[in-house]
Image (cartoon, rainbow, N blue to C red; front, side, top):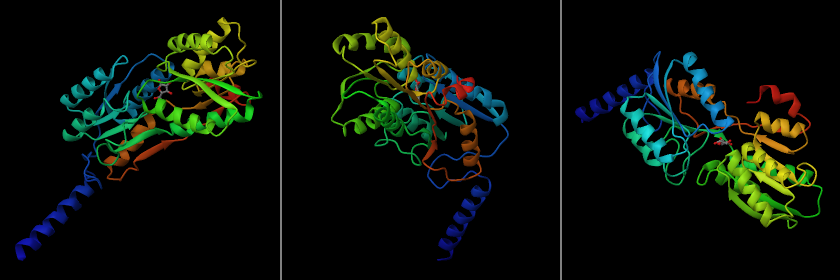
Length: 327
Ligand code: GZL
């Protein structure tokens, strides 16, 4: 009896000491000790649009003030290379991983390997398939926007501002298999499904890229010349669609309503110029939030599974007020 009591007491003391050192956590996740400098991994997926460039800059700009020795890589649009970049960072002995998974499934094994190596992972910007990997169990938390709500807000604005009888909608989807593409489609399409006069006649990926968005819009315009609403999952594809529409003699903002998400400088300018109706913000500035959340975790706080970012909405009423801060 005495031995068991002593063992239980020793275990309790052990947890107590760990908690004081900030190394314990409520979940069975890798702990993170409080120290002056951290070796931090940030494996960026690509740098092919202003949003990505702004996100990467946000991490670089935060590094010194947050005590990060930052190891940043660029997977040039390849999920496989992003996996390899994560494995390399683990091998280099990073203390913490901030991962923006390009697609929901391919990065999951790398998340598991980070945990097995004792590296706490925070997903930023995009998430992984929640049926396979969970916050609080396989990684600490997801820091990001509510993409379903973004899609829903675009749909609701469209319904309030579309002045036609029937909506013939073309949807330009983001990267296939990515959480923003999956969720922005769900949010928008579920709202439109409740309105018989609004029909999505085509939905195709432009991979979040301006030029591919333009090419896809050109093709869909030939198949659906009566299109009068274009919903792009991000501003880069929306700008590409506007280029395609104008090349075909259409007048975006007059005979076709273009609606989107992100809040880039070019999108705000298109709104000011009357060529785009709305863009719901999806902030790329994750550096400070990543720093704050990491420090909370190092102090021993239990982090909420979803550290949610709130997003503004930009229209002709306020675009000019915010273009100077846009990226
Ligand atoms: C959103 C982010 C998306 C942006 C796109 O958090 O993952 O990826 O909306 C970017 O512009 O390519």
